[in-house]
Structure formats: C-alpha cells, structure tokens
Length: 316
Figure 1 (cartoon, helix red, strand yellow):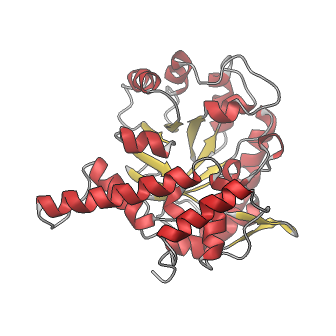
Figure 2 (spheres, rainbow, N blue to C red; figure 1 turned 90 degrees about the horizontal axis):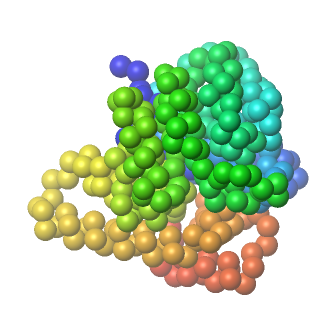
C-alpha cells in the first residue's frame, strides 16, 4: 500500500539553522530527523521558517533535499516548500528539486508546498497552478499565510486566498491540501469550498489555533522539535486516532498534563520560534550553534524553556 502524502496527524516542521559559512549546509539535520521521525506522520522542509528575512529567503536546495531523502524511509511523507519571488522562479525551484528526485529514482510520498500570494495575486492563480503541476509527478499543498504576506515590503490587496479561488484551484486533483492560519469563519468557508474533495485536507499551521479548536486533518508544528511525543499524543487524541490502553481517567489526566506542558512552551517561543527553538536545541546539544545572537527577551524565553526542560530528553 502506498503511503498517502497527506496523512491525518502531526507534521513536524524542521527547525533548522543555516551554517553562516556554508549557506547550503544545515546544522543538526540528522539529529533533528532522528528525534522527530518516530513521532510525526510527515516532515516539512520550510525555508520560510528558518529564514530571517521573508523578502530574501532562498528555497530548499537540492543538496538539502537529497540529504533528507537519504535519511528517511522511502514511504515517509515529505513536504517541501518551493515558493519563489515570482511564478517563474517557483516553477524553476520545483524543476531543480525534481532533478534530485529523478537522479535518486525517488517516487515516494512527496508534496510541494507553496504560498502563492507571496508572488502572485488571486487573479489567474488556477492557471498558474495548472502550469506548475503540468510537468511534475508530485502533488501540491497550498499555504494560506496572511501573517507572512503582511511582512512583505510590497503590500498586496489581499492577504488570504479567496474562497472562490480555492474552489477553482481544488478542481486540480493533484492539489491535495491547504495549510491554514486565520479565523474560524474563513476555514469553515474553505471547507465548504472543497467539500466535493474527500481527499483534500486542510491542516492547521497555527499551533495555538489547533490547541484551541483542532482541525479534522492535523497540525503542522515546529514546537514538535522540542516536545515530539507530547505533540503526537495531543494530535492523536484531538483527531480520535489514539489507541491508548489506559483507563479513561488516567488518559484524561495524562492529556491534561501534556497539554499544559505544550501550551507553556508555546507561550515562550511563539514570538520568535525560528530563533528561540534552535537556541534551545543547541543548549541540549542536539545541534551545533543557534544562528544569530538572541535579544534579551529571546534569551529570557530560552532560559524559561530550559527551566521547564533542562535536558530535553536528548537521549530519547
């Protein structure tokens, strides 16, 4: 049976740190994948997370994708961001990465991830996605990220994919999912727009939203780098996928304690996860270096997390 590229559950977004001396080298890749893979249903490679400047953020590089493909099982779902600064560059990013897949004879469950409104308006988006998918054997997941769009130096009219546009682009069968951050009413409209697609999944890309009102599909979490088992337990319980053998009272008590731990840490890193989470991982010895120097507030957040988890179960 072929593994679905859009499994229900926890998708871990790798909290990587770029080596300043070698821009295509990432610190701690092997140890992070070894830490996350047993707990997650898939992995996301997302430069929009680890890049400090959204206007000058490079794509996933072929060497990085090759390294990851060699590290994970052939049936393990991988999501890879291809978003560029233009429609043409996004297509070229996809083509460059596909050369690696072709050379490795890789045909596993891989999906490209794209935030189209970073470089394209809602107008003409269905046509762009038909062009993007015309040559690729892999599926596509769209990313609706109004907060990221709001950071652009060039302001756009709309920060969200329009519901009518999502309905049209979802007519393409290889557009298989959406990552969403935003209000509940919008996601309900999105769900109605794709109701004819039983194979189309809408994932929460906001940890706080998922903790407050879990989606039916799952969560993309960067906090899973810190607490992989805890995020897995909460996600499976929220989606009614867990098969615990504990009594009901013991199960509820465990989930309450786990949820409290996850919420506490999320509160500390939520303002700057791309800086705070790698710094914690470095303090645990899971990666070498932590990127740019931290501000006093960021260092305080790191210290608070370490006070709750001094060892990080690095030898798990």
